Amino acid sequence: METSKNKNSLLFGLIGLLGVIILVAIIGFYAAKPEPLIIQGEAEANEYRVSGKIPGRISQFLVEEGSQVKIGDTLALLNSPELMAKLEQAQAAQSAAEAQNRKAIKGARQELIMGAYEMWQKAEVGVDIAKKSFDRVQKLYDKEVIPAQKRDEAEAQYKAAVATAKAAKSQYDMAMNGAESEDKAAALALVSRAKGAVDEVKSYLGETYFISPVNGEVTEIFPKTGELVGTGAPIMSITDMSDIWFTFNVREDLLNGMAVGSDLKIKIPALGGETYDVKVTFIKAMASYATWRATKVNGQFDAKTFEVKAKPLSTIENLRPGMTAIIETSLK
Image (cartoon, rainbow, N blue to C red; front, side, top):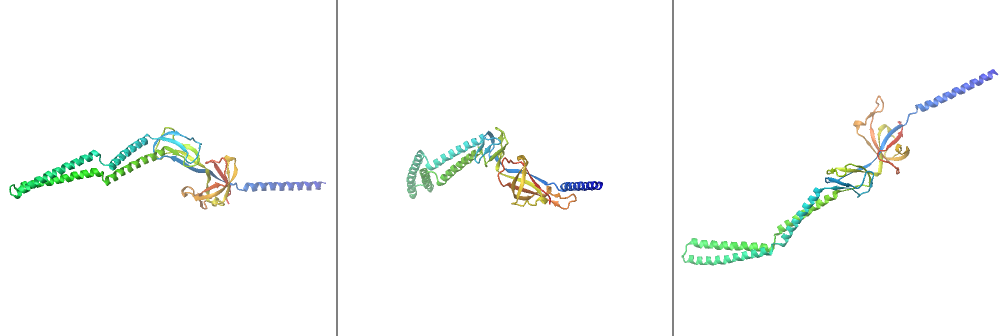
C-alpha cells in the first residue's frame, strides 16, 4: 500500500515538474520573441498659399478658418487708393491721346485754311509786282541807263517774292491736306499706348479680389482686416483635403516589403487605432548628412533613411493632415 502511494506521489511530482518545465518554456519563448518595430509617420496634404500682385490694405474677409471653398470663390477684398489714382491718370492720358488723334485725322481748322490761302494770294500779288519792276529795270539796264547793281537788286527782289509765294502755297497745301501720314501714325500710336496703360491698370484691379485657386479648406489666415499686405505676401492657406497621403521615414534595413506599388497596413491612433490599407507610391533616399545610422553598436554597416509615401486605397473618414500613422514591422 505504501509502495503504491509512493509511486503515485512520484508520478504527481513528475507531472508537476513537467508542467513547470512547459510553463518556463512558454514564458521563455514569448520573452525571447522580439517586439514588433514601430515606424511612425504622419498624414500630409497639398497646401496652397493665396497672395496678390499689388500692395494694399485688407478691407474685408469673406471666409474664415475652417471654411470650405471652391475654385474661383472670392476670399478677401483689397483696398488700394494708389491703384485707383493710377487708373485716373491713365484714363486722362488716353483722353488726351484720342483728342490729338482726332485733330490729326480732321486736319487744320477752316479758319487756318482760309488764312493760309490769303497769305498765298498776297504772296502771288507780290510776285506780280516784283516781276513788273524787274522787267522795267531790265529794259533800262539794256539801254545802259542804270548800273548793273540796280538791275541785280531788282532781280533779287523778284526771286525773293517767288520764293515767298512758293512757301505760302506749301502752307496752304499742308492746311488743306491735314497732318502728314507720319504724324497721323504717331497720334494713333499714342492712343494705343494710352489704351494699353489703362488696360494694364484695369488688370491690376482684378488683383484687389483674392480668388481661391483650388477646392479645399481654409486652414490659416495670416493678416487681420485693415492690415497692410505687400506684393506677393500670402494672406491665407488652403489645404486640399481630397488628396491626403502618408509619409514615413524608414531605415533601409526595414524597407523589406515596401517596394513602390506594394500594399501596407497602417493604424491611425486618432481614429481609434483602426487598420487601413495603403499603397506605396514613392520612395526616395533622404539627405545623407542626417540619416546615416549604425545598425549595431559595433557598427557592421551604416543604414540610410528613406522617405516613403503611401496613399489610402479608399477614403478614410475624418482623416486630417498631421495625424499620426503607425506601421508595425519586424527586423528580419
